[in-house]
Length: 407
Figure 1 (tube, rainbow, N blue to C red):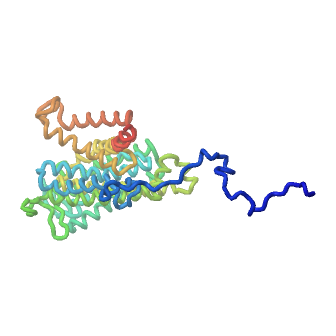
Figure 2 (cartoon, rainbow, N blue to C red; figure 1 turned 180 degrees about the vertical axis):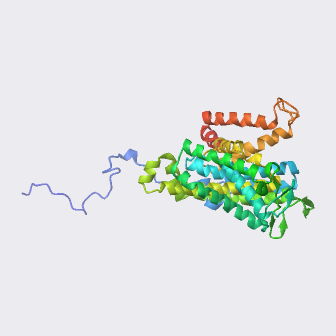
């Protein structure tokens, strides 16, 4: 038993540790202890700035916010520099953008084809004239009017367009696709018949004058109002009213599309049966979106009437409905920005061609023969619709993200 190996006590063990023992390393592989970095040669030099991702959120650059700020300042300053022609063209574009947002909620987000959007614009425009106008005599006919305050007449005209959409909503809630498009197309023919024949209300073929809007004591007529030594008339005053209306309509539609109703609308568009199985009331949602789209169209009609200063039945025909469909296809289906971009493109193109018809090839001034600016613009945005459908299905608003991805 005395020959048995016994380990040495801890006190008798070699106090010198073996480098790398138990770690598979040898003495030669021992890493030196880390040393402090050398002092900076220039102690007064500023330390390097942290990357953008490490900075606080409020200090990070926001190019989109800067772009929106610059655009807002530009739109606010334009009435001080543009002449009446371009201000009127811009007002047409803003009114068209409001109407395009409405039909984009119906067709782009919910998948309901509507060919009768112009009918609801006519309801808004003529509803405002009847509610705000008096019993005036025009072209030998005494026109009916209630003489309400113009701001109240504008609100009631929008509600009247929504009521007209509500009366049609049971049909819109049960039809879809081409069947709904054909049913809404009938509204155009009914509306044209009423506009041309109900002379006591509409003035017939010659239309009727539009009472100027009065809001908070400010008359949106051609009476001059000096602002920073610049005379403001009807177009300049309406510019800011239209900007506010477009901003509110865009924000409301954006909130609808990003919330629970927007998800339900997209489910109806993509798969109606699956949406019903998940608990989405299909008929009720379709009817509600149709009413909302009609109210957007009514507001656009009121603004167009104020800009035109006279309503005529010919303007609210089937071509106007087709133009609104072209707007949302060119700009981008199912988005507020797409509706605005498409409306600007389609509504400003005839104005630009009319302005420079004498210098552009193949385009002649209206009434001089050849291709008029209106016809040329329809050819161009018809070709744009085909090009967008074939090569850019998401519309013009998808062009910038696709270019960034390629870079």
